[in-house]
Image (tube, rainbow, N blue to C red; front, side, top):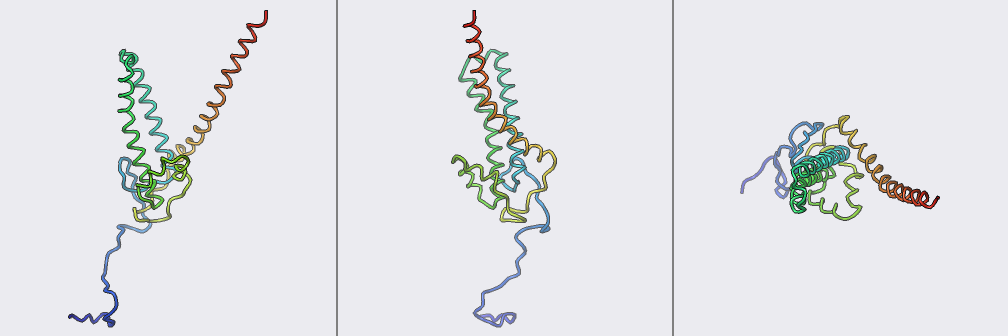
Length: 187
């Protein structure tokens, strides 16, 4: 048995000099990694990235529709569905990766993203703040730039306009139908 003279208590737990688990400065931030499941992103960046990726997906789908219409391939529903599915794969992968990074910001495992499949539970990723400072997934994300903030504030505006359009357009079409019916009845 060897005797440790630095610790006079032979029943004490052994101690060792271990470097800090986290590398770098305690006030540092980590870089944003777009196509990675590692790292952290905040609420505003999550909203902006999902909005911009969705807009890119919509533009790509419209371009695909135009190309299919011009080439005459739009007659086959199987081709349209298959190509749209192939187009949606990168969008869905990007959404899952950013959702995992957002989970990391809340100090949750990426597997918690499965909870977002439950209706209204996905709002947690929008409204729950991230952890302050470092957590087990690394340093905090960098501060948001003006583009990220604009994208984050555009998301609820576009959402609200979508709800307004979903209510107003059918009501307006009903109004037009009633006006045309009234015009036909007048002699």
